[in-house]
Image (tube, rainbow over all chains, first blue to last red; front, side):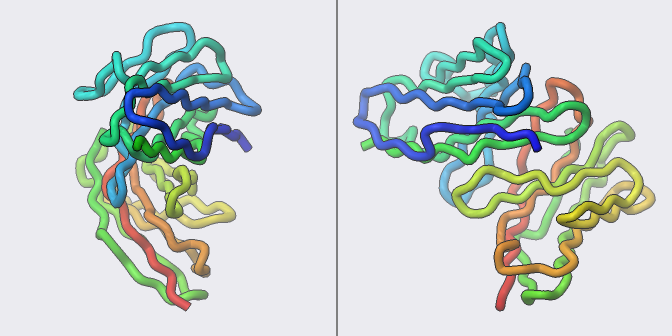
Length: 115
Length: 111
């Protein structure tokens, strides 16, 4: 089946540094990918929709200058958390639509801890 | 997308069927019902989806009421590995449509 590979699975960074998370579709082309954030004991919250070759669409309240999204190819989308702070510590998950109405497939998530 | 309502938690004995309900009374005619689950600290996993008819696959069965205002996900023989948060989502499935997650149901399968 369609697989989305997300890396790294976990990362610890110092406050003020930037962190890049990669999301790759392994056996299909993903023109659209989605980025979610999940805080402990909460549901997934959509951050942005990433479209190949164009600017991402951010949900209300998500800072586009802080969460940089690049979708330069049909198989790769990246999320860069810039100038990370402890409150950015969270579980970040990417997703892509599988063709037709086959649903969405998700990456395994990235646990970001900012110290 | 239409809003869904699910019980916050349910328990099930190992080997028994788990029946997870979902209310989606405002669903529109072109919206599908999707079910996903999330095992702790992993990305969500697709389970099944349907429009009007009942659906079955190797993981589960989906029963949708005739008026489509509610549905039930059935795990026929629950195992300990089925312990997860189960999300019911309605979505028209368009090419750029995003999934909006509610709080889901935490299913705990007990030995």
